[in-house]
Image (cartoon, rainbow over all chains, first blue to last red; front, top):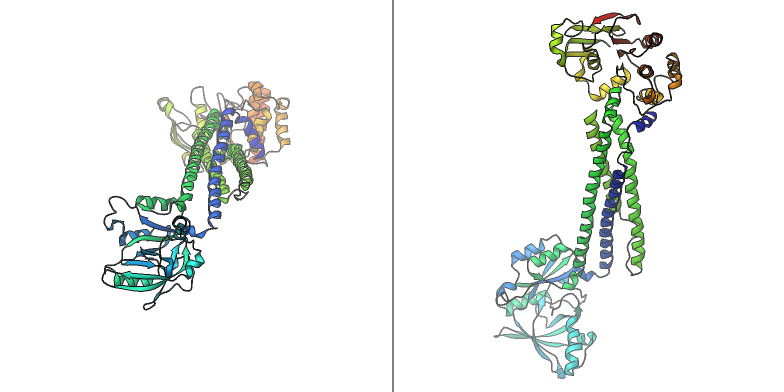
Length: 397
Length: 217
């Protein structure tokens, strides 16, 4: 076929509309590059996010409660109903959820000896698997006078740096708090009972006063209202706190949580929007580039329709002509695709080096998805070309 | 390969054909493989039309043309291309060379169409060009050639491929007697070599070939 194709080259003048062709190739190159950059940016961001996140796994836990508003502050509307809890647990981004149970009885705490500290307070309890404090004393069974308590780190900080300093009280280290036995009185107005409270740890995860669940169940049964304890807060373990679907779910249901932990989600949303916009323009441009390509093929075939007709009369098979035309164009978009990929690889290398200066680590190589996208784009252009060549050659043969 | 014509009537010439008696139109004819068929036809009787029907580049007829019992419309585009590369060759009245190619390239286009191992060697092409006295113009652009020269190039082009039937539409119209005789001799040689037949249309009777069959259009 070599000699035949060489002769065809003199008959079918592919030089017609050269500028149009250059424009189409240029458009294709830019479109490919835009799409590759979009995919690569997305891959880089995922990489950054997950590398960072691996260093602190407390970000996996979120305490969720309903927003307190003017309308729901009065009655029990800020409690979670069983249906709402079930719905929350069934969300794909929730790995597991634990209800936080509040005390239905009065609690009074007094410091021993001459510390002269006494206060009304409350308890809450969560399933043990959601607690970030490991301590051998964290258990309770009926009859025990000693009740282990987990305090929030935030509470200790508030006391030490806010309350103690301004009131002239001594500051307490976590170790000293742990050795102070506290007198705890729980009551329901009619009866009361005394316990000794011992702080066994400080939690970063849950801002509350936690007691073991068995104690909470026993106390609610004996000193509570008798109604099943409603849930006001839920602790959930999530696979990815920056998942925009999680944020949307919380907003849609008027739930709130520690906003700081959702910070990544905002960034991720912004990056997603930017990536989508770049990708969208890339896609539009690719569409037009392919359109110009197929119009260019139409132009060439139409301008040679007499020659093509005579070639077919002399015995050239339409398949031979299609193969010839395809061979004229396919190297060009192969080069375009590989060129765009190389350029994207160069950009990625440069980005990686630049980010390293800011202590961000991303791979200096383009992602697998980027290479796959490049292959996909080339395949799409190939298919469009094959189709338009088939269509226009059939028209004149 | 046998060619059968069954009540072939060109649609544009229908009334005329039905009024006059014709040896081809509206007849049942069979041409056997290897036969030399001559069709005499005065101007305007549809000589070129018949050739185009036989070579399947015009389809405005009623009746049928069959190759080995298979009517033309049943062949696919690829099968038609295969036939034109391996079994059927043609010399058009209007020659149909590519102006943008040289005479040699026009011949070579047909030679290389079915692959890079041509049926006819380059030496044989040179011999044929020598026989028809066109060796000196082979590398000129077809555009610059005279009608007589073009006609001889078209004849060589038709002879460089394998075929079992050769269709010729007034193939010697621009040639003098000496060149006509040389061309006729070359065509006879090539047909005998391939055991191929031909269908030739012309205005008058002639003695260029030993025809097996005569028809009047």
